[in-house]
Amino acid sequence: MPALFGNKDLAENAPWMAGLMQYVPVYSAFKVGQQLADPVQQEMASMHGKGTMFAGPRASDFGSELYLAPSELDQYVQIFGRVKDPAGRTWHQAVDALIRTADYQSLPIDPPSGQFVSHRAALIQTEIARFKQLAKQEFLYTTPKGAEILEAQEALKGRQNELNYIRQYGVPGASRGNAGGNLELLDLNR
Image 1 (cartoon, one colour):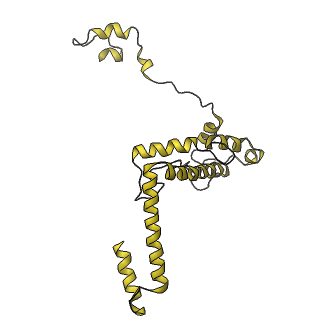
Image 2 (cartoon, helix red, strand yellow):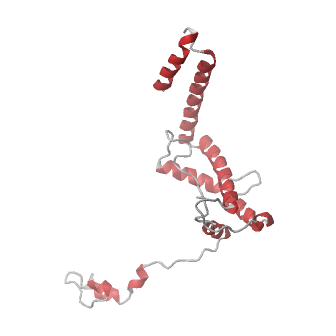
Image 3 (tube, helix red, strand yellow):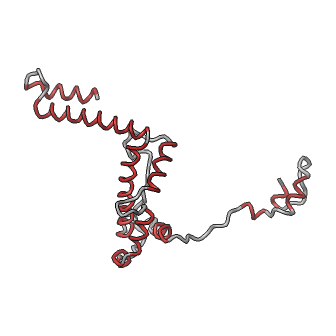
């Protein structure tokens, strides 16, 4: 509408816009940024570009064949947010406790670099990875998709054991010299 850009002439099909525009200034359509007040968010934001990417839960965490659908990923993220470690802390509480320690505060504040990982960022990512493992375990044992993933992992483990047996002892009923050829065929068929 022309009135949105400061023009007084309104389109003929929208005379109601004149009344509305006197109460809604154009700049109110744009959000005003807020400063981060959470120490964990501040610390993670200050680490941006320092050789790390804080990798929380992802749809591919259980493997490329066991990719999570959006609703399943949402469940996994919710579990990650509320899962607690043996000390009874969530990942946010654990990272908050970490960044308040004297050892963490004594680490240098590294400048942004694509080559080197910041020690501070590495410690935060280690905590995130620890809680991702806890969330994965809870997801596997409490959700329907987790049960499917466990079943698929067991089948994969059985196939790996079978291949290891064949590599070590050969194919049952085959001559010892032909075991390598059968192994290649078995690998191709999986």
